[in-house]
Image (cartoon, rainbow, N blue to C red; front, side, top):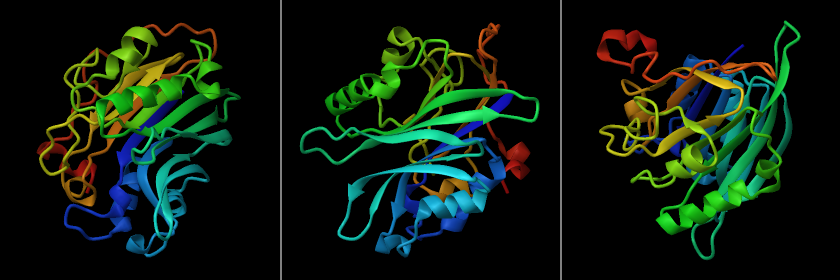
Length: 275
């Protein structure tokens, strides 16, 4: 069974033109039709975003019957945080507090998603949707909180697991924790390993690979790409990243991993992909 995952810091639906346009974010999400969407910087009840529940708005616009939101930053009115959208039932969810000391409030939205289809295939995938801080030491401690959480500690190595979001990791210090220690693979590079990341920030001229998806267990990476053209350069200050996996049944061997971009990065030649 194929499973498409998208991670996107939507910047409260405020674009690089400083305009609040949730319809642009909705158009991007709806176009790609990912099975699971990891969103960061999602406003709920905040005046700058018309006091809308952007989690609900994005879920409805993209046709996602299931979503879970972890609100971390409290404003004078309203809050914002991370939202996971899913086409499959979310059987468990919890917001893991990643706030370190007096640093800005941060969190990781954990969701256990029951993947099923018409062929009697059913398997849970464990998803951690996070937004890390701006300090390198803060980020290391935040990853420590994630991997020491009750939810993460209970995951068997063969269980399909995704950790994605905005890592704010400009110098790629965190990736070896996942790849060399925790036996994850990175799905958001131009090739295997964790070097040569897709550059996603700032959207109009990206220089940093801040947005990542790591995977482990019975998941085989089939395709990966970032979206950099047209509306994505304007809708948020980040670009979305997409990974497509083959989800194997429990006990089936994962025979191969993609070691290069199986689906080329979007280019002017295939501009119709997004618009």
